[in-house]
Amino acid sequence: MSRRFTFKGGIHPPHSKAQTARLSIEVFPAPGKVIIPLQQHIGAPAKPVVKRGDRVSIGQLIGEAGGFVSAPVHSSVSGTVLSVGPFPHPMGKQVIGVEIENDSAEEKQLLSPLNKPWREAAQGELIQMVQAAGIVGMGGASFPTHVKLSPPSNKPIDVLIINGAECEPYLTADHRLMLERTEDLLTGVLILKKILGAKKCFIGIEENKPDAIKLVNKLLSDSLYKDVTLARLGAKYPQGGEKQLINAVTGRQVPSGGLPMDAGCVVQNVGTAVAVRDAILGGIPLYERVVTVTGPTVKNPKNLLVRIGTPIRLLLEACEVDFKATQKVIMGGPMMGIAQSDLDAPVIKSTSGLLVYDKVQPAIREYPCINCGRCVAACPIHLVPSRLAKFIEKESIDEAMEWNIMDCMECGSCTYVCPSKINLVHYVKLGKFHAQAKRAAATNK
Ligand code: SF4
Ligand code: SF4
Image (cartoon, rainbow, N blue to C red; front, side, top):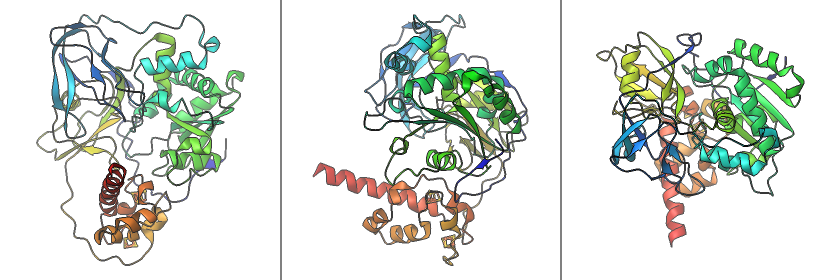
């Protein structure tokens, strides 16, 4: 346990977690009305299976998966469907969602539980329940979990990594979950390990969470967890990136353009592991999650257990945000989070936090590149951001692709360290957009 795992590259922004790291998770009351988007995951949107006037219960299916790479959506309250239509979405666009008026009856309609102990269930049965529960990656990527748990037979998985890094500054939702639902987390880990048939499992936790490391390690001493090891991770951003975590813990490299399964690994977030446990043992679909509400203009920061579909404005009000002083609200962390333009947008399955700022940095003047190489040293994917930015500036998309622009994970580390204040991640995102359009055009020819 004394060994410290890390990766090459990355940055050290201030952790800024003290505001909420010691605050227990509080249950946020279900709101009078929820708006539950049918697109909360990577892949095809779910299709509505309810209409205006229908009565629904907590956990009832309201949107069926739109394909294999998709996830069903469930009601987070009991009540009446007011409408199905376009609503503000945290990604900044209008998305079809289901508006439900809460009758506060708290009636539930959960999934049928397994008719046998989970250890005796077949892998397929367990995956089916994970799929039916609408579980997606809760660390932010929101990739449907059942897809990750179904790698093709020519990609055997021998290592499962549980991601408890929570490397984004400010966020503490995963930290609190590891402290407050430790046994449930470890049960989820064993279920995931069984599904994948992985020989080995690592739980990666950054060393800035010593209480979580101590507690998880104590429980792991039970022989039940003999193939599960705690990996103490260096506190560095983006330690929680899948490729960085795999490299830090196993020494393996995910090849350019490849996926974790190409390195024999699957990575699952701690919140996802708990959700898997709840689905398999309790038949509970994913209709609530832990959200950290924090930042300079929050008077009363909290870690909250929130129903999916709760408008973010209600959380900000409950945490006594000074709206007059607030200039920016971000869903997620400061490095990779999404700025919010409409506070009526709801909490979704991937909402790890709401970060509220009083100052927005004025547009910063960019200076010429001085070839210092800091962006290259910081890039966790070992790209050359300065060169990629130059390619994009002169619209040389092919050259940018040859220099693996599509491998960029948009972590922002390059921009963070650049002394010339060049917004490198902006150039790279733009380049990826053009490269994707070019690929799509070539496919459609
Ligand atoms: S090029 Fe992409 S992956 Fe590399 S540091 Fe910049 S944003 Fe991160
Ligand atoms: S960090 Fe900025 S100034 Fe330094 S090489 Fe990269 S782009 Fe140029």
